[in-house]
Image 1: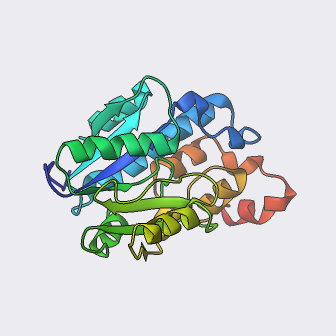
Image 2 (image 1 turned 90 degrees about the vertical axis):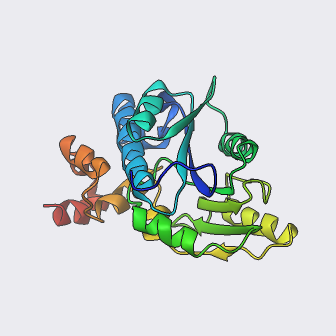
Image 3 (image 1 turned 180 degrees about the vertical axis):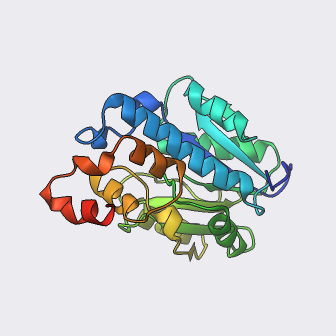
Length: 235
C-alpha cells in the first residue's frame, strides 16, 4: 500500500452489494456463480488501484458481503459493515457520516465494478479537485451515471446515485453554491453492468484480474453474430 492510513485527507469509499445480488443484467451471458466470481475479481482490481493511490489517506469498503470484507482486509482497507445490502445512496451516505465523525477531510466514492481503474487515474482526479468545499465528478461512459464523486467535506452535497445521477449531482453541487469540476477518466468511466459493457471491456485488452477471469471462462465465445468482430479481434 503506497498511501498511509491517516486521520486527515481524502478516503476512498467503495460500496459493495452482496455478490449473490450482483450483475443480474448479465444473466444472459453469465451464470449466478460466474457473476459472483466476476464481482470478486472486479473488486480486487478496484482495491488494488485504491491501495496504490498516493493521494488517498485510506480506503473504506461498505458492504454486508463477507467475501468482500475479507478481500478489503487483504488489501489493507477498512470495512464499514452492513447487516443487509443497502442502496448505493444509503451506503455512500453512511460512509460519509462515518468519515465526518472521524474528522476526515472528505471522500471519493468509487464503485466496485470499474476494473480498468488505476492508481494514477485516482490521483489525477483528486489532484484536480478544488479547495473545500468542493465537488468533482466523473461520469459513466454513457454520460448518465456517476462513477466517481469527490466531496470535501464528505457531505458537501446530497447524493443522487441512480438513473441520470451525473446530472443530478451537478445540479446538487450548483444548488449548494459550488461549481463542480468534471473530469474524464477512461478507467473509471467503464462500469460492467450489461453484456454490452462486457464487450467494451474486452476490447480494451487489459491485464486485470477481471480480464483474466473472462479469459478463463472463455466468455468471448458466448456472443452472437452481433459481436463477431469482438471474437475476431480477441483471436
